[in-house]
Image (tube, rainbow, N blue to C red; front, side, top):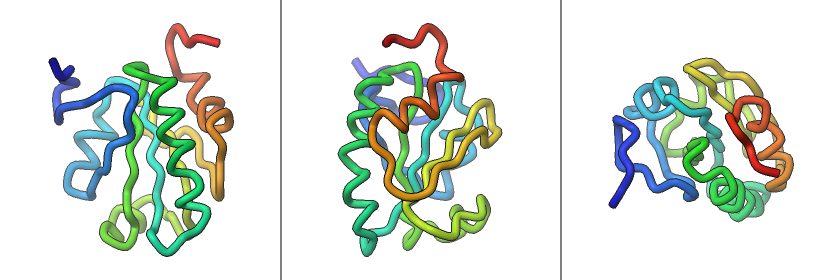
Length: 123
């Protein structure tokens, strides 16, 4: 059965695409930390980070949510958070941006961003 976090069906351990319309509900109102990768199809490093995001999502499971947002399709969301280069990965905790990484990040770097905000993290 699909677990519900109160907004959209969520499959722990998998990145999900998000858009500007649902950003506040799915990211800012999330009860767990959220990693959001802002990306564009024309961006080589964005293609390289995709499997790293998937691996981080699998490792985090239900302890955090992982979203991807295409800036070419959702420019208002990128502008709202002053994302001027991609890939950019932002970490939100209880509605506030707590960390930001620019450029390619491997799975371990992504996990390290989230680690201080994850309860009962596993090594």
